[in-house]
Length: 290
Length: 237
Image 1 (cartoon, helix red, strand yellow):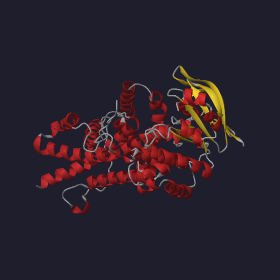
Image 2 (image 1 turned 180 degrees about the vertical axis):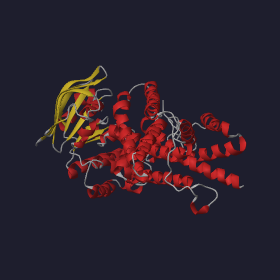
Image 3 (image 1 turned 30 degrees about the vertical axis):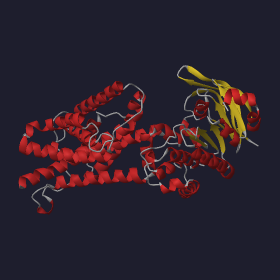
Image 4 (image 1 turned 90 degrees about the vertical axis):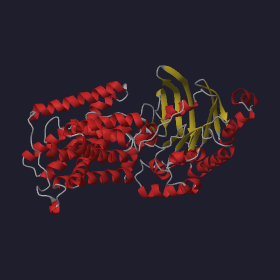
């Protein structure tokens, strides 16, 4: 029983990471109907930036904050400079751009920092909080950080005029322009936010999986699964899907299929959801008149 | 009356196809003008051209500003509210959020909240449904919401694209009544595109009749209403 509880809680901790990355994917998907394959590599690259800052003598939390801001700027720049020119291109062209971004960031990271695995510090103490035997401090801490990020985002989109404008621009760009919203900038902001969320997820997962240019590969796959399970156009669904996939992956890996096949869980989920319920748990069925 | 809108040699293109063939018209501050004509005459395109939503040529002056060649967002910020065909509702947002978006470019937050209450005064139905998802409103309610969202911008000119489309006669009556009130009380000029020529002419001061991208008849609403030949051949009543 102890082992089960332990695995379940550990699943929640990684699930939070998947939830964040899934949310970043969904944000861009909602606004553009494109899936950003480079989301994970962007997060990885930002985590390396954080590593550089920490090695340059910054404290953990100041490096954390600077990295989040850098990630935001990087996201905005990528949208403005690279994605915007292909905005109206056929979907395959956009996909190729995203895959190119993935490869480019992966290679740049390898080139600058080499492919040797590095350790990344956790801001949380090594001994478990309150001497509990189920979860490490880092697991509890990263769930906490994930929840704070999610709450901040929720408040931003729900209660600020800019958040409302971003939702409006994503839903109905033509109408948004007619009330004076600069839709192009809203997209860029969305990219910035998504990159910032990804950076937080990267910094939270790096102490667990260690820092290397390929560290986000598996995580991006789980995040895809999470986004699909929740419904690819539902932010709340993506978060739910993230936690669900995290727990499932851990429990199945520990008790049923073994760790070697864990990644297959994500793929089975992706295929399963697409076959059985393509809209996911919370997605909308899109109906259009022809 | 000072001139509000002056359009000269307006052409518009969808891709390489020219759909407006260079016509000119004007509007005075606080007036109501109707654009009439059959399907495909270019009425909707004219409104879109004014808002920079299609490729245009020619000159568009709005008060002291040149509008041609500008982006839609910049044009509407100068005081033009466009209530598009299909109503442009933000379907997944609440009624109140839709209204709030109308005031998005305004800096006076208190004024925006006051204006929302004022809109609820014009359209009590919207108040009843202020927390409801706008996509669940009826067609008439969505049309009211679209007009109210436009008014939230505190415009000098409102472009209304077929406000009667697909609505029951009683609702159409109501909406036209409210447009008259708005024009009188808020001093908003209205450029109205309508299929229902009789109602449009009863409301408007001036009217233009379009045919395949050209203005073929213009005059005061009373003149056009009184001209039986025009009524029969172009307006179908």
